[in-house]
Length: 633
Image 1 (cartoon, one colour):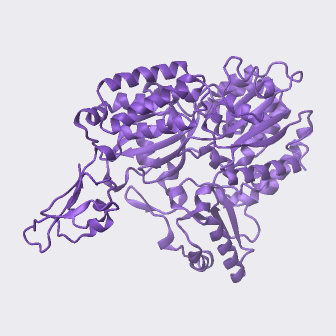
Image 2 (spheres, rainbow, N blue to C red; image 1 turned 90 degrees about the vertical axis):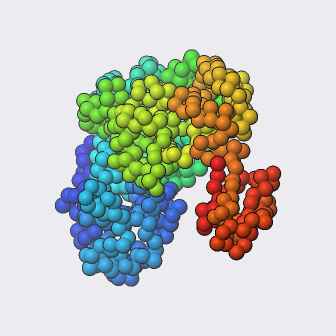
Image 3 (cartoon, rainbow, N blue to C red; image 1 turned 120 degrees about the horizontal axis):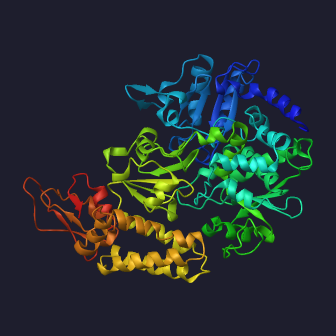
């Protein structure tokens, strides 16, 4: 039980040995020669990392060395596409795509004979040499981790490891050395802005809710709903470092005068939920939640509420309505939640990543945090990078880092020699940034100036094979499905906008439709009730701005330049290349491929042709042809 600051210091000293080897320090646990860290985040777990952990423990037991090797299941390392990931310390050897059948070789060769298994190491090419150790890899070297500082480093189910890395020291400092107003001022001075999308100053939000401390019931809420397609930042932080969120929410409660908090997390995140509940229980057992924390008169309780996957519940008032047990629909503002929020009481709501920065700001000071980032966007930002990129995964960089640095230095560039075309930031609420702006520094204001937004941090990379009209259609279709239907501009306006897009990708569009779309976008943005509707047109606005030529090609030429929109495609067999083998005909699900009377020079069988009236443009014929006789246009 930790009752005082001295108790916390003693707990930290006792736990340092647990993590020292991973930090390159010498205070290692007695008899432990190596730490083997296995990613147990959602991505690696789905690839079988827990079976890998069990196989490793069994093999260590069979070799009689369980007392020499420490196996730790951690959160996400970041390189999600390479799972299951395993890192061996103190060397930092990075293994990827490890299978249970590889375990015996790793144990004997690396853990016993000290010879790393070359074939299982991830070899990243950096300059003139290969990097196979975590600290040498460009993916990690070019990041600056604050919110992700513990992810992939600590056991998220062991509070001792969190405490060993200065966990709960910020809460102790706030409660015993700072007044609530000093805490708020530190957050204000740091320049931290909300990482959930809008970028509102976090300290200012706290200040608005801080009046009448002790006289009015208040709440602290955490938005862990994270509904953007391709986004997994908040989930990964909860899975890899849940105590950081608990500590930050307690600090926020002290700052505004709240004694109760809620974490609203989507039910599709079972690992995050389980680890968060374990962390809450551990914090209670240690006296870090509950009554009289650190011997003060501050009390704080934390509860979890599940979301059912409605995208609109990422909006703050809809989220609070859902916590109250009602259908998740947004409420008009004002009054804002800082005045009238959860259960009609003053409430602050921040997302997971925002809270993940709080402890470090309190410990290191506002100037430390302000030293990172740009003039108006301080600190770092976590991104979930996916799509057409070599290194799919989770990363954190200082605000102001350029897209080029993120995509090429960290992301490894575009696979298969393809050209970078655009990146979608902010999910359905964001916009597409074209290749011509790849050297733009990433921060709130630069993205807004381009008609995009930071959003929560989803980043979908696209190459030359992507159709930007189709991309706009994809995100708008998602928004239409997720609209709560409460206000007409969003419910009806987005549906009409989607119909215009469908008209264009089917080859029936008119140039006048572009003007209609722009007018409709402006109406939806200005008249919708909540942020979902107000930002829903952004993908359409951005693609019209930067890729208008593709819209014109769909309308005037009746062609999709990227060859994606099926209704504008046609598949053609080059009869001089066709050998008449018939494989394409066998692959065709609608019997649209028939023989001709033509036999190409040098061939023995009649070539084939496609009956365009029957063709459903599925592409199965082209995918199965070994002779490149079939093309699309």
